[in-house]
Length: 145
Image (cartoon, rainbow, N blue to C red; front, side, top):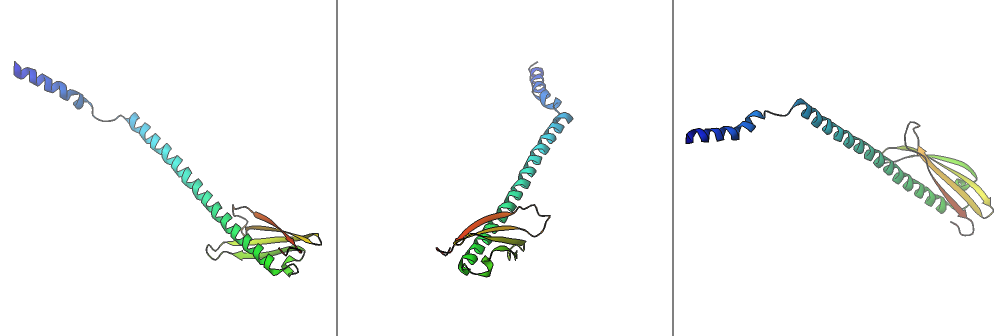
């Protein structure tokens, strides 16, 4: 009699484990959908961060090029041909990345003592998604900068 009671307890303890065979197709489908949803969000985040990095690198490069051009124009002097009124253009290639850019600057005489220099830098390829970067410099004859 005691042996029969022990056997029944063993059967009761084992019966929930024996009847549970695995997950259903519905549970697996929901888990896979959740994983794909999270991976899609991760891929979008990665793509947008790469685009933001590309734009930041371009703007850093543009700031460097424009600042160097401003320094060249300031050191050239007021009567330099680069500061003659009109539109000027210069192609530039970045030695590090190999990107080809066009640098335009327009010089206008505001009055006899002041020149306005508007620089714009943009990618040479029209298909590029990068935008134009602009900066303005006022050059005084009295102050020589």
